[in-house]
Image (cartoon, rainbow, N blue to C red; front, side):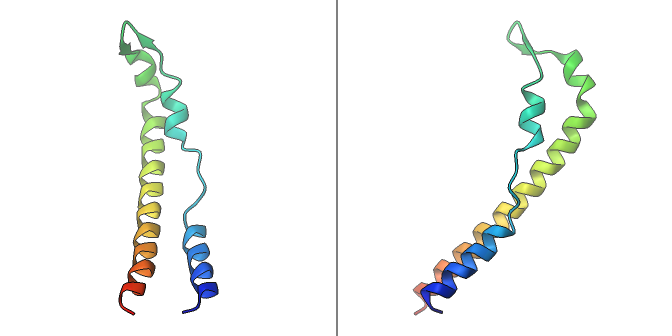
Amino acid sequence: MSEREDIKAVVHILKRVPAKSLRIVELLNQIPVVHGDLDLTVLERLGSEIEEAKKEAEGYKHATEEAVRALLKLDNRDDDL
C-alpha cells in the first residue's frame, strides 16, 4: 500500500469515530457539591439522563477502541514487510 493509500485508510478509520461533546460531562457539571459531596437530590433528579449519557459515552468508547484497533492493524502491517 502506498503512503497515499495509508493516509486514505487512516482518514476512513477516523471518520467512523463520531465527533462528540459528551453529554455526561455536561450533566455532571450541573451537579453541585455540598460540603464535599455531590448533591444527591440533583443527582437523583438527573438519574435517567445520566444513564442515557452513560450509554452514549460507552458507544463512543467502543467506536474509539475500534478505530484504535484498526490503526494498530494498519501500523503492524508495516512490521510484516
